[in-house]
Image (tube, rainbow, N blue to C red):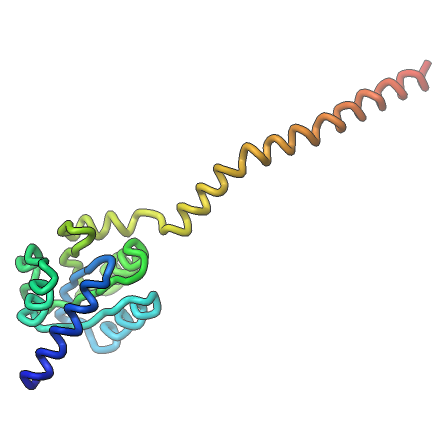
Length: 173
C-alpha cells in the first residue's frame, strides 16, 4: 500500500470513528474469505462498517479521536466494526458470529468513552433492542387504558345479565 493510500485510509477511519456510536474489535485469524464476507455483509446491512485494518493504521485513527485505551487489544489480526446504528443490534451480530464461527473471537470495544471487554460486548448483546424496549413500554402504558375500557364494557354486560335473570325468574313464576 502506498503512503498516500495509507494516509487516506487513516483519514477515512478517523472520520468514521468520530461519527460512530460504538466500535467493536474482533480477531478473525483462521476465517475463510466467505465467512469474513458474511460478517461484513451482515453488519453493513445494519448500516455499519466492518473492515480489516492493519493495527498500526487503526492505532493512528483511534489516536486522532483521542482513543488510546484500545492499544492493548490491537494485537494479532484485527477487524473493526464501526457502529453507526444501535450498538446492541451490532453486538448481537458479533455474539452470533462468535458462536457460529469458531475462529471469530470478540476482542472488545469502545462505547461512550468507555473501553468494553469481550464480556461487556456480550452483555450488550443480551440487552433488548431499542424497538423491543419501546414496544414493552408502550404495552405497559396502554395496559391501564385497556383495563379501564374492559371494566366499562363489563358494567352493561353485568346489568344485562341481572335483567335476564329477573326476566327468567318472572317467567318461571
